[in-house]
Each structure stands twice: as C-alpha cells, then as structure tokens.
Image (cartoon, rainbow, N blue to C red; front, side, top):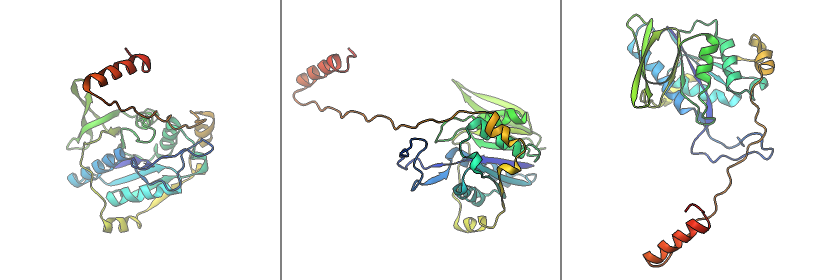
Length: 264
C-alpha cells in the first residue's frame, strides 16, 4: 500500500500577521511558519497505519510552496514519512485551491497511491477545498472530516466516521480513496531530535512547472480566484466603563443601548 499525505505550510496561529504595503499578501518576513495542524493529524494517521500493519510499503509527503516550505516537508519526514515531493515554481505562487488541486492531481495521477490523506482544512485560508477537489479530479471516492478511519484486513476497503448534525455518519468504501482528517482522530507525536537529523537525509523530489503535464491549463486557462487586496479588520472602538450605583449603571446602559447602539 502506498500512502500520500498532502500538507501545507501555514503561519503559526500565535504569530502576529501584518499586511504588506502593496496589500497583495501578508508580510512573511519574520513570520513563524509551521505544518498546517490538521495535516499533522493526516501524517500521524499514516504513520500509525504503518505501525499497525505489514502492507504499508511507503508514505510520501507532498507540498506546494516556495523554498521555505521544504522545512514543513522535513518536519513530516521526521514524524515518519519516507520521502517528499516539493512542487516549487514561481508559476505556482498565486494558485487558488482548485488550481492547486489540479496541480497535485496532474503530478500524482499515475503514481498509484492507494490512500491519499489531507487535513480537513487549512488554518490560513480555512477553505478545506483541496481534498474534495483532488478526489474529483482523480475520480476517487472521498470522505471529508473523518473522525475515525480503519482499513480492512486485506487492505482493500475502509470504514470511516464523520460528524453530522446530531449524529455520527459511518462511511464504507474501497481503496484507492481520498480522506480528509478531522482534529483529534489521532494524537500527534512530536518529531524527536534524532529523527529530525535523519529527515535531512531522506529524499525530496522537487517538481517545477516544466515537469507537470498540462501546467499551462492549470495556471492559465483553468483560471481561478485572484486576490486583489488584503485589508486588516477595522479596529474596534474603545469600550466604555460604567461607574456608579447599580441602578445608575443600569440606566446608563439602557440609554447607551437606545441612543448609541440603537438595539433597543
């Protein structure tokens, strides 16, 4: 069984994000970048499947991004992936989710992966579109936001749970398939220092635009959304502190709600 885990490098959620002066992107200089947390659950699931089974032949991690995204690949290689694929080219810098899915599909369609895993969403764009789009483009079954995932003894079928309103939905199907992972399906491990050192020796294949069949359609004619401008949210006005006796503060509050907030 060959497993592919698609990951993304994103800004750390604790990092202060600033918009560039040209308003076309965030200011990335000095911003701490990490593996998308939901993708960490995907790579952990892949590693645990290999630890439990004898038929997992390889785990490959793939990412699309600039040179700095290689650090994210090295992290998941340290967690347990065997090799990496880095799709890196200036032509890939402004792709939206559909274009990125088309790029990944064109790269891996003939690789014979039995299971493709991905976090259910990215914490930067929060879209969650890549997994379903990739499944559609590869003509594979898809399970989104899985909270449980198991393989049959022969490795040909899977069973998964996903949360729906008021219940859990149980889904069964055949491999190959694309599954996106919900937070908490597995408990993620931290890469050890020895494994981080070993990860530097694991193979990472760089794929450029020249290596992708039909890339001109993906980044050109296929089209896609374009970000024209980023703006930080407007600053909230300072709050007001009410002082006095309880009855006085209640009267002040009612007046403010009527005259300023205009909600009563």
